[in-house]
Image (cartoon, rainbow, N blue to C red):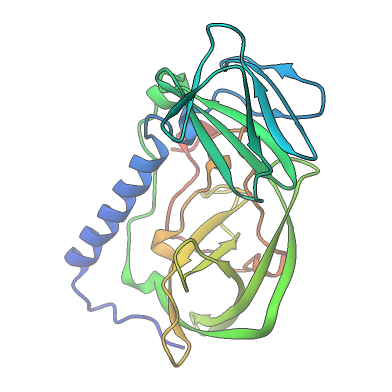
Amino acid sequence: MTVRDTTADLSAFTHDWQEWHTRQEAGLAAPHGFLAITGRHWLGEEPQRIPDAPGAWSTGADGVVVNLDDGEELVVDGAPVRGEHRFGVLPERGGVNALWGDAVIEVAKRGGHDIVRPRHPDNPLRTAFTGTPAYAPHPRWAVTGRYTAFDEPRPTTVGAAVEGLEHVYDAPGRVEFELDGRPLILTAFPGHSPGSLLVLFTDATSGVTTYAANRAIVCPPPAADGTVVLDFNRAANLPCAYTDLATCPLPPAENRLPVAIEAGQKIPRERSGS
C-alpha cells in the first residue's frame, strides 16, 4: 500500500480539507444540530412528561405514542397534530423530527430503545460553540489501502457512549493499509451513501490530544480493484465528543490502532481541549 505523494499541491489540499472541516462544524452547530440537544429521555410503557417538549410520551409493542394536552401541538411531516399521535415502530438508527415552535423534538431508536431528544437552538452548548481544534492537514495522512469484502456481512456488536447500550452493525469488509511501513487493518461499517464505508477507530493519540472514545472517517466506495482512500485528515469527532446526551457507537476492538494518528479533529474545547 502507498501514501499519497507529499509533493501534491499542499495549498489545494489544505483548501479542500478546510471546506470539509467547515461543513462538519456547520452541521454540528446547526440550529437543530447535536449541540442543540437539551435532554435524552428513554421511553417506557408508562407515559411520562419530559422537560423542553410537549405531551406525555410512551412506547410499547406498537411503537412510540405522544398524548398532547389541550393547547399543545406538534408538526409532523408538515402536518399539525394534536391529542394522541402514534409515531409507530421506528427502525434502529432511524427516527422522526417533530417541530415544536423553534425547537425540534427528535424521536428515535438507538440500541433497541426508543428515546426522545429535544433540540433547542438557544441551548448554551450551541450558542457558546467556537469551533473544534484540529491538526493541520497533510497529504501523508491520506493513505491508500485495499478493501476486502467478507463473504457475507458480519454482524458486529460494539459498545456505546452510554454505559450498557450496544449497537449492532453488519460489517461488509475490512481495509488493509500501511502507515510508515507498518501493516494495519480496520473493520469497516456501511456509510450513509451507497457503497461508502464508515470506519470507527482509536489510536495512540486518543485521550491525549484526540477524543478518547472514538473518531470516524468516511471513505468513498472502493474502486473495482479494491483500492480505497483512508483520509485521516478527515477523522471526525462523533457527537459524544461534545455532549453526554449522544449514544454514539464505540469502535470494534480490532480498530484500536497501536500508532499515533496525528491528524483530524482534536479533543473539543467543550471537553477541555485546546
